[in-house]
Length: 243
Image (tube, rainbow, N blue to C red; front, side, top):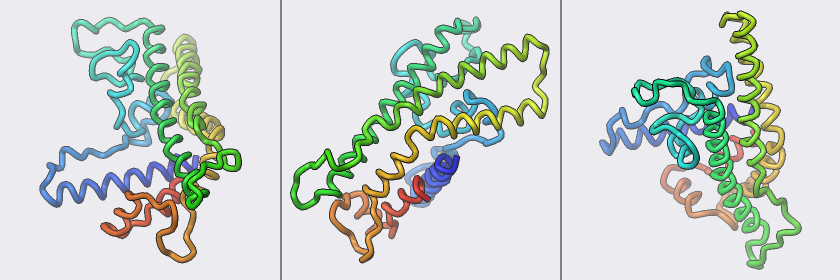
């Protein structure tokens, strides 16, 4: 669970910095920069973790394909105030919508895998111009298992929740404690499929430069962050995933 918490802190830091700049220069009003993450206390189910606690930057984009309701989170099964949607949707439609959302998310993060892969190829062979792919780790697709496993976790917990309701169990304090443990265990389990490979890739793509200067393979974004804001972007990214 260390990696998600580091990413949580890092993204909050970047969002806060951007908000201070945008609001401080009168480019935006404060209400245009709401907090990116929800409350940790809401994360006692996987559905609530993704729908309320984790960042919602892609909340509506993820409903681009498949059955969905306008301006609704793909993991929210609650009925809306729209009279046309007062009836609870069939569970099959709900899970198809959920699976489509995580499939789109897997695709989006795979694009990030591709960017990181090119960064690895560039940093490992900057002078020859050749892509010696056989000698370097291939991380394209590393993110896919994590996101495709999430609907499975939601399905498991929904079955358990419905069984609990059938047995007459109520939402008490101990139930939420069990829920927090369940979410922690599931996220830790599903993260293990790509965490080590991602850490190794980050170590190669964003090496620590002993000279302290900009080396080969440094991107324009890294140079701008360093010159304009004094931010060592490579070290920041390393800290999110490697520690």
